[in-house]
Amino acid sequence: MTDELTWGTMPTSEPFATALLLAIAGLLMGASVLFSRASNRIGVPIVLLFLIIGMLAGAEGLGRIEFEDYGFAFRLGSLALALILFDGGLNTPLAALRRTWAPAGLLATVGVALTAALIAVPAHYWGLSWPQALLLGAVVSSTHAASVFAVLRGSGLQLKRRVGTTLELESGLNDPVAVILTVALTANLLDPGQADASGIALDVVRELALGAALGVGVGYGGRELLRRFPLPTGGLYPALTLALALLAYGVTTLLHGSGFLAVYLAGMILGNGPLPYHNGLLRVHDALAWLAQIGMFLILGLLVFPSGLVEVAGPGVGLALLLAFVARPLVVALCLAPFGYPRVETLYIGWVGLRGAVPIVLATYPVLVGAPGAERIFHLVFFIVVVNALVPGGTVAWVTRRLGLQKAELPAPHAVLAIESRLPLEGELLSFYIDEALVVAGIALEELDFPEGSSVMLIVRGNRLVAPKGSATLEPGDHVYVVTQAEDRGLMQLMFGRPEAE
Image: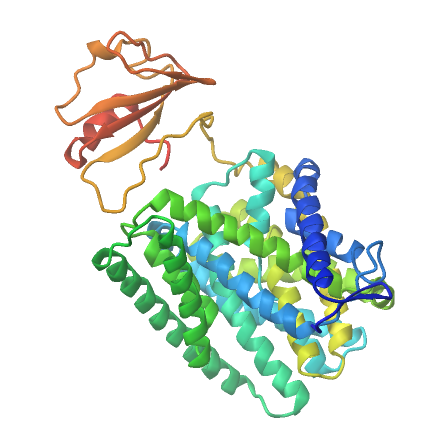
């Protein structure tokens, strides 16, 4: 970007250029957040709305903002994806990795390659050369499960555990493979014949192995750093974990490893350890991930020129429908066949593999390096992402209910109690929902026989906070917070059932 911001044909000098830039950024981000409510109601991923607002603000939209800096967009997109993957890793339990690493890993590697190959065939039929068609396939080969879960949260649904963790792990693991394929096939487009299948396969194995090793190293090293060097104030901890995320991505990429895999695994290992101010850190990184998504999609929307979309509308829609109805379901069926997934789960995973941030960011790379046909590929990718979000994305909630894959969820409390601590504490704070079938329902606290180290700390009843005095009675529908010791956890679960957070 230059030192001047151009809005329409009116250049503005400093300091007004910066003020105008910040005002536009605030307006676009605020509008994106506020309009997300409408996105939830119609069942379309929120990130698609951010993209459309960016388009409307662009040079050919209502905002008339001229922006064609693909380099800045690629850098911002890489940063945003690193923050999103780090946040995803922080919230991924290691138990999920142990249960579904094999099917998710196969989808994220072999599945990505098969998807790229299947999409390349019709892309070549619609006028792209084989190198361009294979590049297009690689760019759109990865999924964006965050879009799926955004739709589900907006609809009040939760997926059954194995289905949800398979989609989540696949999305965290398949971005690195798509990046490696995109870079290799872009080089092949610039210098035909440079890349071959065996060379690309070796590059994939090498970059993933290095990314995994460095990501695990940063994760465990970060744990030890947080344990050995307590910081003077809680506000510094998010800055340190953000630094670890940037180091995991940056150093690994500089060493020709998969930075995206490294940052995802580093987040996973940190998130499954004894983090100081654990809940607060998760909230900060969740906010950073949303901020990254909004900014990234707005910038990418500014890059899209509607006049360039008209030319590729037919092939774009056709490729998007083939991806949603043929390529993705077929690849998922082949990859999950060895693992005994029921047909209904295989069908669902095949249907909801939404495309989102990664394909559009990757599509800027060929444009950035001047690959032939890159702008046509960029606009095709835009069409594929948008149609994919509207067709599978707009039906996720309906398909979840129709196939019976939603998980029965207890109603969430109106208030949440959490303990923030710089150092690990002995004992646990557990939350329970009082179902009418529980033995403790209708019983006063003074009548319950708690162990010496256990007690009720708070009762949440609708929009009321109830003091846990001895005469207080536990009523069906209450949410109860109990402090207990590790050795008494089993007894608490016998009394109150399964904790809400599990």
